[in-house]
Length: 352
Image 1 (cartoon, rainbow, N blue to C red):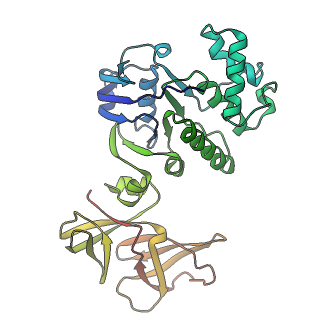
Image 2: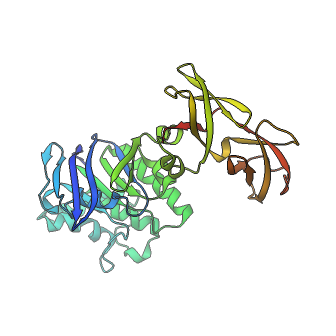
Image 3: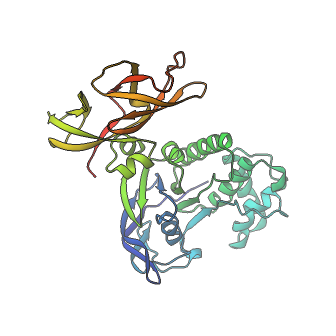
């Protein structure tokens, strides 16, 4: 397929529903050939943003460009985008091939050419030979790939995916998200992907845009957002985090020295200023050792064995910490006094 991949630009976009402002002055740029995920909790504005890009909603103010063309007020059928819906939206009475060819035939393409393009589309998503089956004869993951093929054969500048994996079980979600990412990288199309699932966003994205209350809370690569969250909201939303008060003692431009209780520790930090601060500590960045006295003491409140790791809740003067410990051969029972330590990675100083 000859995909004409395009850029996406939002400039000062605002969307109101009556007196309620769903999107506040949104500006963002999506480069051609990248997969960008809009991530956030329910009500954050990610779906409204996607619907405005699709032409299903129009902004109250601001501009939207696709491939350099102003599409702000154009209807959905003039946007040169295709959407993959959460529900797949396949026609149950049509064969798989007929489903994939439907949009092409509706646009006036000859039936024979449309069917040939549909066969090519099914081959691209790994479903060659499935064309004569009905959707009900396919698994959920296969149905989702049919929906992707139906969107891609239209050769849109931008592919939109609205919670595409939410109807699949956890194991199938992992497989299909890998397939979607590999397909996007192989074909090089621009994709805007909406999800509330943090792990899904980390797995598929070139860039993640985290939204909160209609604004961009932070954007960056998966690694940037996970390792350098800009706020406690981001730290807790992009993977679980313990937010702990600390004192920044010094900074050499690369690392900062922090103190938590009586424990001093070095963490990556280029701009942290000396004084009171907070750190986001990932559950697997905490070490526990049984001890009566410690620089950073704690007491085991709860322990849960989960096969390849043990989860602990630990009471400390900084609050209750959630800890993921790979040391399954030991058992730190509730009420055990422990000494808490930190790994070098998995800790970030947050500014707000």
